[in-house]
Image (cartoon, rainbow, N blue to C red; front, side):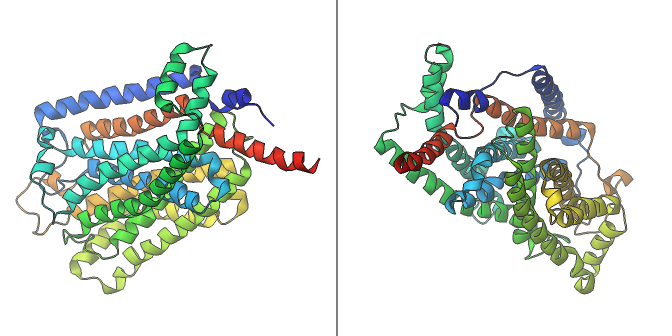
Length: 438
């Protein structure tokens, strides 16, 4: 049994060591480089990108869809497990909330980056059309962001109060900051009851919001009637892919935090095994929807769809498609069936591969379809027939990924990564039966 001070030492705020400073410095360099590229893009216009009349959605939208998918982890790994009272979720539930919040913030920012005139963003609200999926995207993203923030913040209140009291004498400045964030938390019965109801309500809200968010993103594509997107399968296809991307990101973050913060006592192989089983289920479901998306059309597709599939299976995008499908999906789905591959290091390696594959999967969803426009491509430069992101696009995209990682890094640095308050409650509950027996 550990004291409150020992738990704070293990789980509370911690200074960056040299490795941590190098990591933050590296992320800041990427962010600054991306910011410079974005300013140049604002000055010169979208001509600095390789997006043209045909590929008008490029790597920015691919990146946006990836962030939206990854943010879905709060709905499956936090809300669903919280509502089912699965106790094994406790060591990683806060990390899932942090990942979700960081990703949905960057999803909203990425949409603004894709706009050639971000100064006109208010027009999305002022002149919104309810029949447009884009309008609903503009509504659902801020809503999901707000609920994700509250789902992280409300369970944090007792831990913030613990840190407020802990730093009362030693570090008055930290006490003031944590005290303001703790909102006068005193563990009163009224506060506990209100917190419990609020968290339960937010957990109920985040699941349908996540499903709506993923479905609306799918409708953005499928309602354009383009070859490759004209499918009623797209919404569940996106949702199953979001489960894979979100859990892969969560496993990666949990492993790194566990190793960096030396939390093997709190996040054990048992937890990774449980996460691995959930991950395997998500992978198998996603395999099923990929069969529906790519295999079945081979027998039933029309000419345009056949040409699109040929581009993916044998043409320009075939190397990326087969790498993403075989290495980034099928192989992980098979390996995670076996317990030896659900060990921490093995599962982390698989998760990283899946996350990289998930990002490129979004690229393959967006780009090949746009290169099959309504009318035949004619009378345009040869470069318009192909698309690969320019240096500006890569720098800006890398900056958004770095910003998401920086948000996660800073929140992990300043917040308890596992609930100290809940651990103290568990210890107290474990002692009481023994005391009664004696």
